[in-house]
Image (cartoon, rainbow, N blue to C red; front, side, top):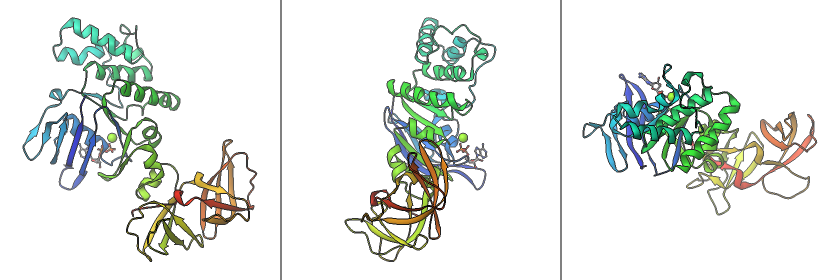
Length: 364
Ligand SMILES: Nc1ncnc2c1ncn2[C@@H]1O[C@H](COP(=O)(O)OP(=O)(O)O)[C@@H](O)[C@H]1O
Ligand SMILES: [Mg+2]
């Protein structure tokens, strides 16, 4: 178990293909951190640099305070000297071996004594819920069980850090959802520092202590799931995680104790925004704000709340628990999630209210 520190990591492929563009982050001991972002944003490359499978062009990687990679000092420890466990999307199961042999494979390569291998393999299989299946042919197992075999193989090393690259992507939706929690709970119980890579925002939300959102090789935001969802730093994060209404406006005044009043021409209204990037906003500045659909509440007519909007229901899709609506307010079509027990129909006039705390100023 160990802390992972990444400092100013840069990785280029060829002349100008910048896969990782100067990123720095720390994963504390026992913490579960997810690198989240769309395909091609540099997640796998970052993970492979940590594993020692890629040599970065610039930057340092420290694990447990030890310098594993330093481009300035010309250090790049080979993977087998890093004592990290890796779990990939493809299970990397050897077809002609039993489950136990697959789990033991890396330990044999390390010349671990036979008795110790047997014990560690058994313990790892117990941990992932495959007790008693050691003698089975590994390829005869289901996809979910094969993924457990690759997790058991990683755990059998007694790794200081676990690295996961989209390990659940090949499983069907139901199993994937179940495995999310199971996997996260297991590594948290074992208190193993984990770096997890996914493009699936729901997976990242459920599993992580902290999420690092990436785009084009750069970090966009770093924070716990709650903060990432509720105070997205910019429009990319707001849009990538969950559903977001994003609106352009002008600050009517500078930041004050209650927030920033933003004039939004598309809505024909002013909204008081008390979340997000308020600091230093000047009167007259162009700003972007975002509001989540479930934070826009239908209000009784006549109530004198701040941030009131009047609109007309354009579309209302009933999902049982909620209505997924488009509500037209002047020139903007607001996405609004309304409780399922409300009565709604297209063409209906509605009054809405948004708490200033749910109106988030974005950094872009
Ligand atoms: N071995 C490679 N050679 C050339 N380009 C690569 C190589 N590996 C990755 N890239 C490029 O680097 C960028 C980041 O890739 P990657 O780290 O795999 O992204 P992600 O895992 O987020 O999908 C992409 O543009 C990809 O095409
Ligand atoms: Mg990848």
